[in-house]
Length: 223
Image (cartoon, rainbow, N blue to C red):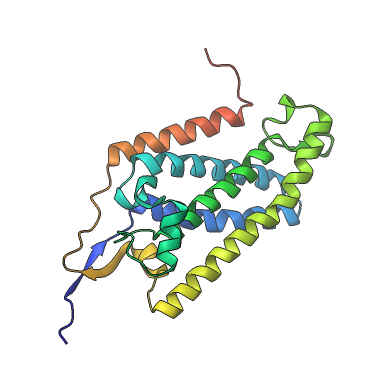
C-alpha cells in the first residue's frame, strides 16, 4: 500500500502561538501571585492577560485562517459527529471539539479577569482598576467570586492539557509541537495558512493595548 506523500506546512501563525503560550504562563503567574499576596504583580499581570484576551478575540475575526472563529466554531451536532468519527470537513487547525475547548477557555479567563477589574478592598491596598465604579458590598461579593472562580480556570486549563495529552497518545498525533513551531506534516494536497497580515495584527494589538490602558485608568469618559 503506497504511503500518502506529505510535506510540512504552516498551520498556526506566530501571534496566535505567542498568545496561547502567554495564557499558560499568565494563568500560572496569577495563581502564584494570588496565593502569595503579591498584589502589585497580580493586578498588573491581570491587565496583561486582559489585553491578550481582547487581542485574541479581535484576532479571531482578523487573523489567519486557523485563528478565525469561523474556521473552528461548530455546532453541537458537528462536534458530536466528529466524536463519532464522521466526516466534518475538518482539515487543519482546531478540530470541532478543540474549537469548543478554545471558546470555553477564553470565556472562563475573560470572566475571571472581568471580575478582577471590580474586585478588591481599598483598605487592603489591592483593588481592580474599576473597583470604584461599584459599591463596597458589590465589590466584596465580586471578590469572593473572583477568588473561587480561579479554581474553575485552573480546572479548565488542566482538563485541556489532559485532553490534548490523551488525544496525542491515542491518535499518535502531536498537537503540542505544531503549537510551538507553527508547522506540521500534512498530505501534499493540503494547503497551509496564509502569511500573517501584519497591518491587521498591528491594529488589533494596538486596539487591545489601548482598551487595557483605558480600563487601567479607571475607564474615564472619552471626549
